Length: 314
Length: 285
Image 1 (cartoon, chains in turn cyan, purple):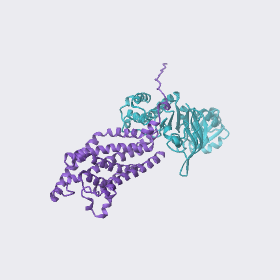
Image 2 (cartoon, helix red, strand yellow):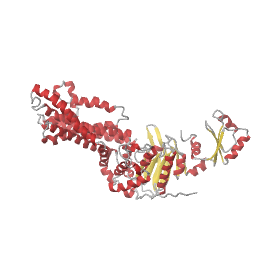
Image 3 (cartoon, each protein chain N blue to C red):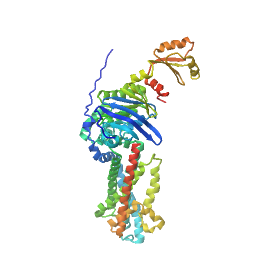
Image 4 (cartoon, rainbow over the protein chains, first blue to last red):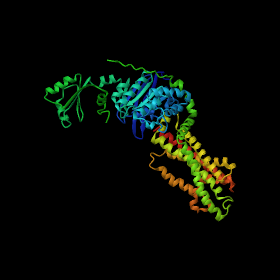
C-alpha cells in the first residue's frame, strides 16, 4: 500500500485487516479508525483476536493482508519509526526484575534515545503519577501486582506517546488496585492521550472507553459508544431470576411473553425489559416463585451475550 | 458533610512526535541494549570479579603447578613445544575463559529476555529491532569476555605462565573464540522454548568435551584420529593453537593459521545470521 497522507487526526486506520496463523484466522478482515484523543476499546473474550490486533497496531507483528496505517505510516515498512512514538503496556508485565524501579524507567527511556538528564526529570514525574515515589529504589520483584502494573504503565509513558496501548490493563488485580489504575488512565485521557485498550471486563470498558469494538472469533460484532451499544442491543433493564439450576429451563417456558426477550443461562434466567419490577410482578402472578431475583441496568455483558450467545468471562 | 478536593499537578507533555527522533534509536539502538545489559551485569560485579580471579588462581594452583610439575619432572622442563607445561597450558585456559565469559552473557540473559521476564519483547515495543537486540547482547557479552580473559591473563602473568608482551594478542585470540562460540550459543538459546535444564546438558555434552578434547592439556595429535574431530570443530582448539603459535611461537603451518582464524570468523558469521533470524521471528509472534 502506498503511504498515503491521512488526516492528521486519524491515528489508526485499519481496512480489511487480517492475520492468519497457519490455518487459524486470528483476525478476520476488520475495519476501524481511531482518531486523536479518543479512548478506544476492544472488548471480547479470550481468543477473540484482541491481542493479535494490538500486536499489529503496536507494529511488532506483521499483518497477513489488508491495510493498516498507524500515525499515517505503514508498520510493515516503518515499524521502528512508528514504535518510537507509541507507548505499549503488554498483557504480561515485562519489567526488568534485576533493576530498580527508577532504573526500569531510565533504561526504557534510553531505548527511545532520550538523554539521561531529561529522563531524570521525567522519571520523577512518572513516579509521582504512578504513586511509586517511595518505591523508587526497590527492585521490581518486590512490588505488588498493582504496583508492577502502574510501573509498566508509567514506563509506557516515558516517551510521551501519541498512542498508549493497554492490553488488559487490570486483569488479575484486586478491586482497589483496579480503581487506582482507572483513575490514572482517566487522567491520561483528560490530558488528550489517545488510548487503545483491550479488556474482557465490561465495567472497565464502560469506565474508560469513548468507543468500543466488540470482537469475537476475529471479527467485529458491533461498534459504538457503550451507551449506544446497550441501547441498540439490549433493553433498559434486566431482571435476573433463579429457580435453581435444575428448574430454570422448564420454568423458562412459562415465562414466555414476559419482557422483550429471555436468555436462559445454566444458573439463571435473564428477562430483558423496560421495567424490571413490573416483569417480576408478572412472574409472581403466574404463581412462580424464584429463589432469588434482581433488577439491574443493562450492561455491556448483556450486549455481548446477545451478540455471541456467550458470556465474556468464562 | 465534608468534601475533599484533591488536585494534582498535570504532567508536562510535549508529545513523542516532537520529543523522540526515531533516527537516534534506529542508529544507536544496539548501544542502548548493551547499556542495559551492562547495567544488569553491574549488579553482579563482585561475583564477576571474584570468579574471574578466583577460578584461574585455583586452576593454576592445582592443574598448572600440580600436574605441571609432574609433567616437567618426567619429561623435562621444555618437554612440549620446548616450553614449560604451564606456558603450554596458558593459551588453552585463556580460550576457555573467553568462551565461558561470553557464554554466560548470552545464555541466561536470552532466557530472561524471551521466557522469564520477556524483556526482549519490551525492548522491541520501542524503536529497537531484533537485530539491534542481538548486536547489543553480543556487545555486552564481549565486554564481559574481554574482562574475563584479561583477569585470567593477570593471574597467568603472576604465575609466570605468559609474558606481558603476549597479553594483547592472547586477549584478541581468547575474545575471538568467545565471539565465535557465543554468537552460535545466542542463536541456540533464542530457539529454546523453555529452560528444562538445556544449559546443564550443553555444559556437560558440549563445553566439557570441548575442553577435554581440544588439545587443552596435551597436543591434539596425541589423541586417536576418531577423537580429533571434536577439536577440529571446536573454537577452543582453534583459539588454543592460535594462542600457542602467537604467544610462545609454537611452530605452525601458515595454512593452519588461516583455518584457525577463518573457522572462528565463520562461526561468528553463521551465529549472527542465525540469531538475527530466530530473534526476528520470535519477536514477531
